[in-house]
Length: 137
Image (tube, rainbow, N blue to C red):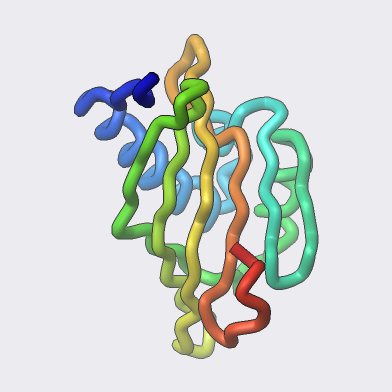
């Protein structure tokens, strides 16, 4: 059995979803985050071990970062479909910190299609530097 293919239209919708993430998250736009994460969505931060489950906790996390939070850039996204139909993505991110330094890493996402369009069901954010353990991914 071969894995299902992701249509070009779906891939473009996922790219738009990732763009909406940066705009909504960096502006602590709690309402716009509903257009990015599933109601039961999860953000998992490999650096700290923190996990935020559910749209409301994700909203609080974004708001609590305050004015001096990183500015996120999402790039080099690739998407695939598992044999069971699970849609996954891997993106590189650059986060510009208030002092001008840059933090980078990878987003490992699982997406879900809702009646309102694609949403992030699960995001694992894994920093690339400093390298910690090879099993972080």
